[in-house]
Amino acid sequence: MNLFKRDWREQKLSSWAFGGLWVFVTAFLWSPSRDGVEAVYALAFFIPMLLLLPWRKPELHQYGGWFSVSALAYAGWSCITSVWGSDAGFFILQFLILAAWLLGAAWVIHKKSLDWDKFLYWFLLIGALTATICIAVFYWSHPLAARLEGITLARAPTLVGQVYGVVVLVGILLSWRTSCFKCALGSSLATIPALAALGLSQSRGPLLSLALVLVIGLVWLRPGRKILLTQSCAALLALGAALYFFPLDQALLGRGASFRDQIWWDVIAQMRAQPSLFLSGIGMEASTDIATGIGSYHHAHNAWLDILYRTGVVGLGLALIHLMLLLWSARQYRHLAPLTLWLVYGCGCLFVDSRSLFWEIDTKWLLYWVPAALLAASLVRENNLRVKHPRIKH
Image 1 (cartoon, rainbow, N blue to C red):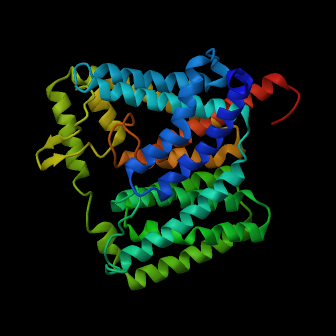
Image 2: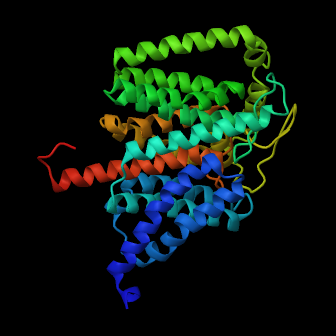
Image 3: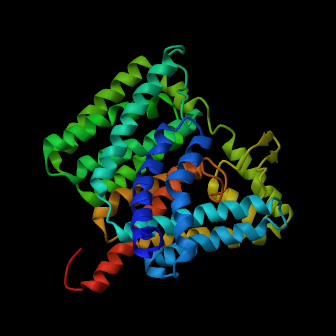
């Protein structure tokens, strides 16, 4: 029977997981809840990887190389800190889920090359459609001055801004990568619903992060002047209209720092009161509430500070090693710029929001672990091709 033939099983599981990878990544745009995304992940990707990875010989060059090793070192240390935190079982499960994603994505892309432009165009179109539906549903019963809330996984306005900021970034980068003006114009127009969702969410962190990343992309990719001039004129007109019709000074500046600065200082003060926390942290716990002088909050509203608070310098150092390895290796591959800048955008968003990166599947996965895994898989594939064909430029 074919079922007992290893090559046949691997081929079927590879096809299953390859399609599942597409479905899982786009699920962050259309799934109605976090439970929905987790169910999609389990059925589309985790199960085939569970049927495959444990029974194969570990080969570093097929599973993401040192990128996966450094990521799992951070995740492993986070699991260890749950010993002096709590809920070790919960974090062991999260370790397995993350490991299956990192190793599985690398293996799938090693077996079958992903057409990145096609993948990103589909992501852009699905994002445009869901953004349109989200705006229509919300403002059917709310005034335009209200901050946009989502009907999918991204419910809170900040999460809406983060998710649709990714869609806008992808669309603009696609327009910068093509020499066809009509294609570039089409990609630009497709970003309008997502850009509207980002603006209507009134989320300053994603807006600022997107602006900074686009400046980096402008220097790195050097897009054509014609499309850049068209986009600049459209942006100025849109900004002028927004300033005329909406009180942006109140929406974007009136909220101040939204208590983030106070939360950060209180977290740092708690660590200074117990210097040992700087080394090992308070430990990972399923409950991430933090008591501050202005109330209790679900997290530190800064993923990097949250990592330091919960896992200490060791955890933060391991997380930064993983990030720096990726960014340093990706700098020479301009064709992977969308994934690289997606990751940089996510890091910027996480600087002013979110808890530790090592957590159950939620919006932060779209900001960090999704681009990190796809970028790592692509970089390892590029290195493998260079080893096999040293005279061919990839």
